[in-house]
Amino acid sequence: MGKVPVRLKEVTYSLSPCHQHIWRGLLHDVRYKTMKRFNDNWVSALFLLVPVLGSYGYAEAYREREKLHHRH
Image (cartoon, rainbow, N blue to C red; front, top):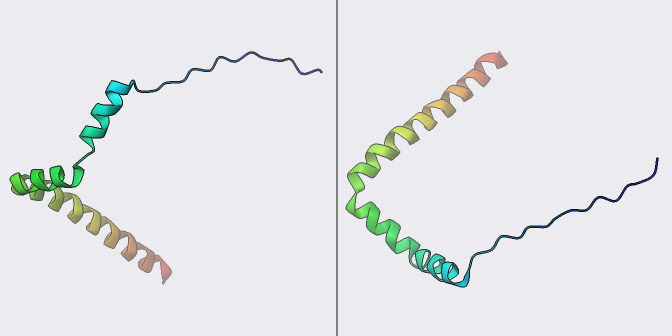
């Protein structure tokens, strides 16, 4: 069987110069903006982070216990 050439269309997406300028402005002071948000809403951040990190720690400890349990 011979090879049949197939024509492909290439589509390139890019941001317009105006949107690139806005995007750079959004990422300009990311560290300052996140720290300001955290300082303004630290109680909400704790209520979000503590259960997530606690669940992750519990799951890791449980997985380790299961490994050790099946080892013997």
